[in-house]
Amino acid sequence: MFKKILIANRGEIALRVINTCKDMGIKTVAVYSDADAKAVHVLEADQAVHLGPSEPSLSYLDIDKIIRAAKETNAEAIHPGYGFLAENFAFAQRCEKEKIVFIGPPSEVIRDMGDKITSRKIMVDSGVPVTPGLNHAETNIDEMCRQAKKVGYPVLIKATAGGGGKGIRIVNAPEDMEEACTAASREAQNAFGNNEIYLEKFFVKARHIEFQILADRHGNVVHLFERECSVQRRHQKIIEETPSSVLTPELRNEMGNVAVAAAKAANYVNAGTVEFLLDPDNNYYFLEMNTRLQVEHPVTEMTTGVDLVRQQLEIAFGNKLSLTQDSIQARGHAIECRIYAEDPENDFFPSPGKIQYLKEPKGPGIRNDCGVYSGFEVPVEYDPILSKLVVYSESRDKSIKKCVKALKEYIILGVTTPITLLIDILNSDPFISGEVFTDFIEDHFSDWKPETKENDTDIARIAFIVDELCNKGKFKSQSYGKSDIVTPFRTLGNWRL
Image (cartoon, rainbow, N blue to C red; front, top):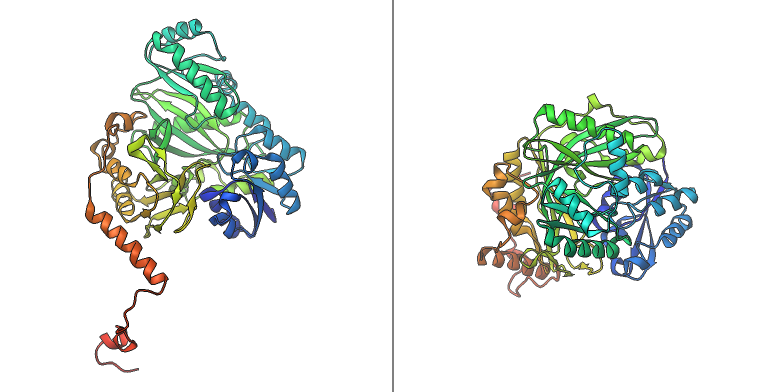
């Protein structure tokens, strides 16, 4: 197994990888920018290398600097996490050239699956159903309108490259096509350096269902069941769960087999995700393949007991999969809530700043993958995700209740978060009944405002003040002597040793 790896990322995902490496006895190298000099992943890694200024292009996106850091620290492999360079085929290609193991799929697979047109063609050729639409990039507005009429409005204009909800526009009528194409193309250029777009059918009341897969270099491929990711804002997920409340055992088995077939068609290696759109009639269509570990991977880990990062490392080292399809069993129900520094009342606008106080929820079946702490300054330069709250219980109903309880115990002061919105979503009748679709937020929470709860706010503030005073040694009075301290020796009554 590897003796040392470099983690080309930051925040909670870097810390997540570090934790598994510690379990496996693997040394870790963190990289960081000016903004992350005091970040948790820097403090927890065995070594840390400064990359440069906070600007991503001068730090976390600088391939030369990351390769140099790996060589200088004698790291044998690089784990890219997600975001930044995780799905950059040029980075994976550079690792291959420099004889550094890239903990992910081969560069050509990242290239092919990262281009939505190429991936659609591969899936069509292998018999995997894809959403109706174009199989080539298109710039002619008249042709886009003809294709939209053919598949039926509404349609999605999508960037051929990238992901994360960038370069996507919904078009409901021909007169909106030109403006949507221009905006999507411009956003795609800014986000991915590629302005190409294409068209797909947009399904109203559709669900976003994805399957986790693992594939080794010896031809073995398995899936670890599905994740329901339909609760989204701006085409980005905020709540994920497994299992999906809508899949029957038969449909789950069928979609899982198709996900495995898709991975084989792509010559996939390592951990990946095959994403499907499920329409109201339970017809499913291939959307894309994410060639990395997903943000929502913990819900799969909670229900299957499989450490996906460990599997990534084992596969990257060249080992055969230790899992067979029959050996993988999912039990219970898990829900993940993404905790961002953002304002849901202001179109989820980022809310960077100093975290004045942080209190994490704890208890059986509660996991909080967190990359921040009290006093940490949330940078403006990066994705504003702070943590991922994951809960597990034996049923969906119990998981929802446990998640609400955990969110109510989660205190973050100093930056705005969507915690109150997440509580309201989980408590809503549509969510409880499993009626979740990709337009869930727009349909039910588009004009959401939190109820004023001064008592909750006051309690949080008091908790912060008391904690600060205790830490600074100021929570005392001159008349409070040792004889006044309440201890078990004074409260248990008569007793003797």
